[in-house]
Length: 206
Image (cartoon, rainbow, N blue to C red; front, side, top):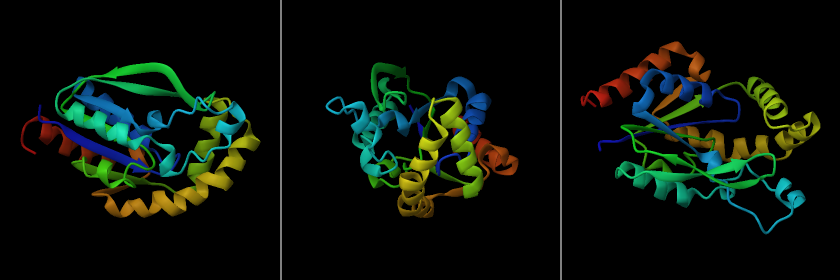
């Protein structure tokens, strides 16, 4: 299978998921998605309080080697069992989700360009760049509404780990992008360019 691996990186709340969703809506069964967030390391040896205190915005929080291995299997035409992360318990769940090989595999995550082995697997690297004030507001809405976090805990996490890790690791990884997209999936000009690139690959013209 001639597989295109397309990476979508950017800070928290930048619009990565919106861009990913629009590509999935456009190409349907030709696209599968693997989220870096599902590859947070498992910490069954820790208490809930210990897990809650971990820095989840540092590259070391992820089992990126497992993700690299899984992406290589997908590119070779093999299905994988992708781990599932449960944000309510700050740990990987016992569930897995089957991801089948497709012509286009989207890899999404804030830190996917920070690891060279992972980055080198990608045929197209897109960095979604959005103003910090917009990103923090989106993060608050998501974590409070969807993940059951308190407003105080979201703000505390943002100031202690999210913001400094963004400045240390996420933003510098922008240099590896083939394309920088402002405002993610809401940037229709950039979206049309990406759609055209994916369509060319699917037609065998890439």
